[in-house]
Image (cartoon, rainbow, N blue to C red; front, side):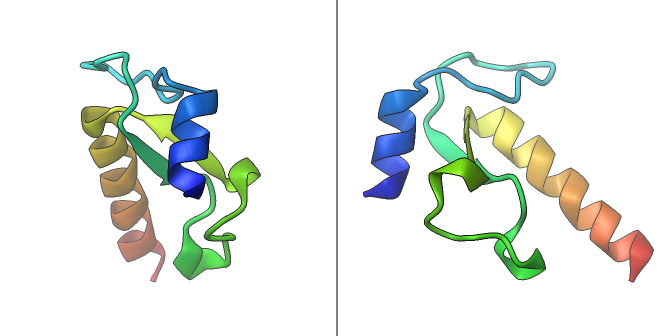
Length: 68
């Protein structure tokens, strides 16, 4: 329900990486849940298209591996 509310409020991708499709169909957590981010807090969510969400998540995973 929170995901739908975020996408309704912000239907365009807020990440806008190269290759952005413009229309958001996923949400990305600003602070990952495993890093203490709130799962259902709208302020912790960013509307994203699939390519941008994948790129942002991949960057977080790489950063997490290099600091661990």
